[in-house]
Amino acid sequence: MNFKEVLLVVNPISGQTDKKKIISQVKKRLEEKGLSFHQFSTTGENDKEKIYEEVNKNGIERLIVAGGDGTINLVAEAVKKTDITIGVIAAGSANGMAKNLDLPELMEEQLEVALGDKYIDLDILCLNEIICLHMGDLGINAELIKNYEDSPIRGKVGYLIQSIPTLIKSEYPFNFHIETDESTKEAEAVLLGFANANKYGTGANVNPQGRPDDGIFEILIFKKLNLIEILKTLKNETNLDSDFVEILPAKEARVTCKKPVAFQVDGEYIGEETRIDISILPEKLRIAIP
Ligand SMILES: Nc1ncnc2c1ncn2[C@@H]1O[C@H](COP(=O)(O)OP(=O)(O)OP(=O)(O)O)[C@@H](O)[C@H]1O
Image (cartoon, rainbow, N blue to C red):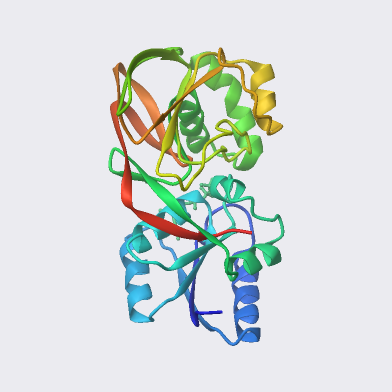
């Protein structure tokens, strides 16, 4: 093990897991391994700057983040210019990043991965200046996330309850103009995805060929709502019908639409947009994997 100073960043309000238990278990495990324990709880205000300060003040060499995708993105912003390895303890409501890293289910096992030697250097997508680590999109999924965020019911049930009103209210399909470093295209879609990784937080594998560390992202043009194909993504099948989804790999792109369309990044609703500029940052994020 080539590190000693470990910082645990905890989001006290994410998901429904018991954060006190996570803190005490991480502390105990670090003591057993003779590692130094530092802890920071996010407040929802200036967390990025505060995490950056903690890292520098304590000479942090490994960072464990216990929270949802929003908390992982905060940490990524704070340490993206360093080579500190980040380990993830899935403690959000959707945990899309944990799904993409194929982390084990048990917290104790996630902790061993977080303290282990295996890692990838993850690409960092930038969508209109916002960091995206696994999946952003325009269209019906972002509308669903907005409706979910506005409703009081959390977790998977909350998403399920919002799916019907979202489908009824949505004005899909949407028309997009897509320009990549390779091609230009007009597309009609229910959902236009920007994928750094394979899966949504539901586990749906919508981008089976994508790799999160290859310097390329994929634009996913979902042409229609096809239940059978959606079920295939949920079962991790890789032979998706090209009438359902068309995939454009790119290193840089710009998407425009005449009418504003709902936009989300890594599960967080951003707003309605008519233009998205997509690039890959020169920095990578070192992240522990099983
Ligand atoms: N102490 C706090 N009080 C209120 N909000 C907080 C606090 N700490 C962090 N936040 C906010 O929590 C959000 C991030 O939550 P996160 O995405 O990690 O959890 P989640 O929404 O439960 O999970 P997921 O994204 O996996 O569905 C950010 O918007 C951040 O500003």
